[in-house]
Length: 133
Image 1 (cartoon, rainbow, N blue to C red):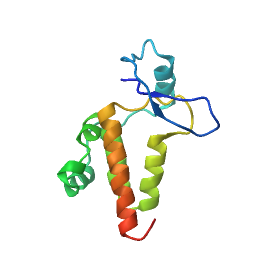
Image 2: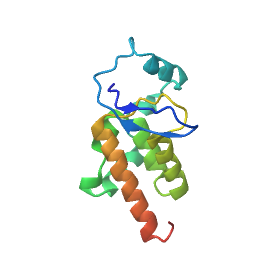
Image 3: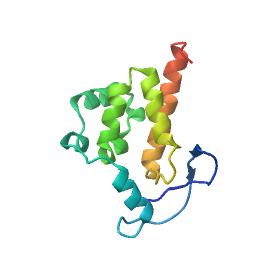
């Protein structure tokens, strides 16, 4: 997994900042080992897109489709697809993914991070057009 974000030592909520570093390996990186210990064991469903996620993906304009996210993190794509019609729940997922509330988050590969940012902008535009901003 790539280490992409440096977490500044600030207050209880920090934002992730892009950092340039090489490949992090679980056997050598204590942050990865710590994150793996906190993460729940994956279910079989976490490794593939659900039918709902595939439908959600097709509903998005081709340029908006998070293909890298779906390929690398199907569990997250499934969560977004399930929440997509609920603005509050969708915003909570983006908040969880884009802001480091617990410290030590490793971040995402650049392509996945850019897809998440693009999806977040699309979500915000949908809210504005619906008058829910």
